[in-house]
Amino acid sequence: TSRGVLYRSDSAFPRARSFHRWETASHKAALEKLKDQKFQSDSLINYRNTLIVEKEPSISMPNIPDSLRMAYSRGRIVNNQYDDFYVEIDMPYDGLLFLSQNWHPYWKAEEDGDEIPILRANYAFISVPLGAGRHKVHFKYESKIWNISAKVSIVVFAISFILLLVSIIFHSRDDNPKK
Image 1 (cartoon, helix red, strand yellow):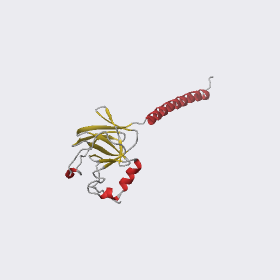
Image 2 (cartoon, helix red, strand yellow):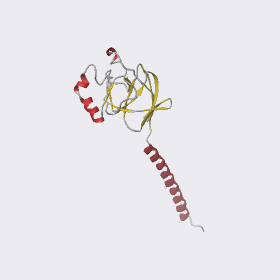
Image 3 (tube, one colour):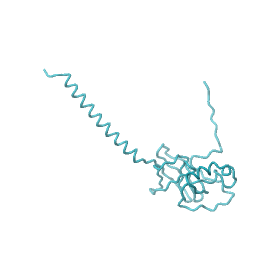
Image 4 (cartoon, helix red, strand yellow):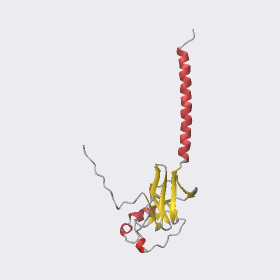
């Protein structure tokens, strides 16, 4: 049997982390910016310390010393389910919580019962604006279409099951004629 080898990349992003610098760009322009060699290699403004978002966040970018530009906080995923989980993070400054989760309009975010706007970040991922301090953000995928489809499927299944039972009952009566 062959054995695989697992490597850990210390340069990979964590699944949830803070960003304290960002630029706003359209969907198409965000992709072009991410592909730009300068954005990948520039020491001051690059993909490791600058997030590309498609809407202006509801918070202002903090003024952080250049020596701390590359610093970030790591978020912790709690109660991880594919469509419902929490992220705990301690934000040293106002900023964006970046989540390596595919963006889709059915994702919702809230903290303490208040909805937080989700921004499309780095072309395909999600982020939410947060003030400085400790946060526990609830992410949930809520598709009205899926919920309606599930309910319709349950009703159709129940009707089909009832019709099957009725058919079996009538069929068994036809096989056993009264004497």
